[in-house]
Image (cartoon, rainbow, N blue to C red; front, side, top):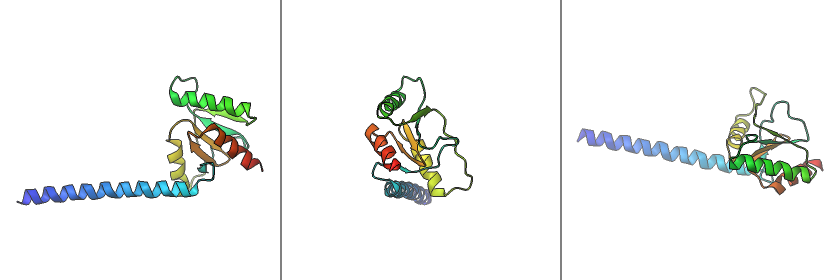
Length: 141
């Protein structure tokens, strides 16, 4: 009887931990959504040495995978619409001691679906090309 009780307690504990982590993920997703602007971009730590006013597109360069191909198409679209952009496969940030929520949002965006797009301290993973243009033009006003 004791072994069954211990097993039941262990299973209940594991279920509780799983439910708590699921709840935390939902809470964080809501926080990200609340931080997003109308184009879906959220505050992130800007990449080190990023040129102001230039969209940074993060994805592997010269790669046949879908995310990298979307990045190439996005860069072409942005260039055609007069939006300065640069592709990169590196994302390094500076600013030790930054806000914990900002760093958590940065990690969530940076590990999202490729391409990751960064612009003036805001970012989004796999945005629609027109949203990136709107984000750029909105910041220019």
